[in-house]
Image (cartoon, rainbow, N blue to C red; front, side, top):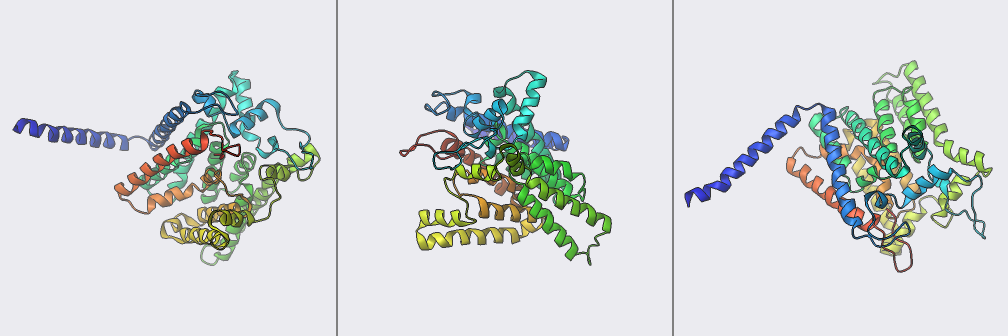
Length: 411
């Protein structure tokens, strides 16, 4: 009896010793190996979730039931990007009998499908293979750059946990599907890193490419402009040499111009000044009124009085978050970015289930989450919550299940 009673304890000690030994060896790996290993494990987990959910998928607008992994991740906006890859953009905005723009390719920026087309010319591989590979590779670049950015404000352990949270966000499966999110995240992380390091001219080409990948140029330009004003205001305590002022001013100017590049390009090709904005409104079915959709959605969910207060409470919570101690440790550039992007979403976004995905550019808050506490229990619990959130996100939003009135909630 004594021997059998001691075996589990001995096995437990052996396992604990093995885990500790593995952790010590992994801690000696180069930082980039640790970051890539974390991201690879996260993407394997997402692949397993996609595969499991795909086995339960019924017929959808994109194909028959039980698609394989590559077909399953090629639905929703992936199909729009593939259409751009194959056909390009229309030279006229398609419109319905009432004159309103119909859904078309101009809502989706060109950089990602252009890179896939270039890779196709080099390799001969098809979209179905190249697009997920490129998206996943861009995700690796994004987390490597995010780690370098996080290290400007925290030590290695906290920065690495920030990468863990970015890699495992509930919406992080989007980083391996044929969407432009991972490419945009890599360029955004690079732009923010160069700004934090004061390398404003080096950031110029990165920002231009970023503005051609997804619509984040307006908040980035606003952030750069506000940061310039902040540097001018603080010049008494933190000198602002004329050369640095000039470089930062150039970045502000180029960011503002690049933010308008895609709408101007759509205008130039179609001859319609509102080609891009009208196309964006096609998904809403109505014209844009700043901030109004949040209050309308609040009224739908909570009634007229509570619905009016709900967006204000949400805005107050966001402000408190930005003023919290962990977020203050991120420095002015990242705090301004989160504030400007949050305000951009509040002003222009129509709140819906896609809002979760559109919050991905707020990735610097992952480091703030890691800085809340250095407790391993806290960080592991948050990781488990994120991984569970991935299952919910893929099952609820990515998988197609037609609603009674037709359609489904978009991811």
